[in-house]
Length: 89
Image 1 (cartoon, rainbow, N blue to C red):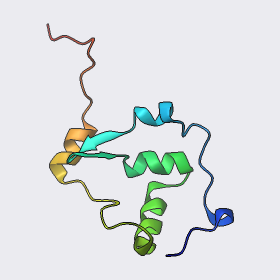
Image 2 (cartoon, one colour):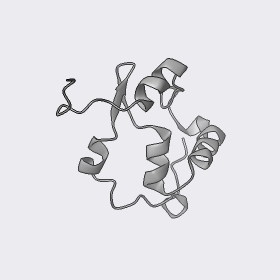
Image 3 (cartoon, one colour):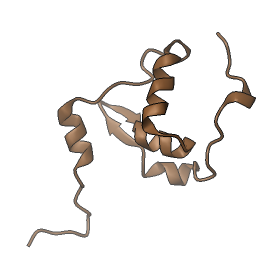
């Protein structure tokens, strides 16, 4: 297995700290995940380009590295969650 060349990998922004990532990590299908849009933002690339590169280099990742959300999962993750401070009146 070939390891990535450090000079060819994209630098990650300084905000990729555990504290910054904590709010972006979701649990979907019993897995802790980052959405492609959040990962693209961390690497300062377009989401489309991130996905193109992931597909192009799929053989470098484990089979369970990524999956596509169903329409229902996407809708559930896209809808704003109520804040604990928000109580229906």
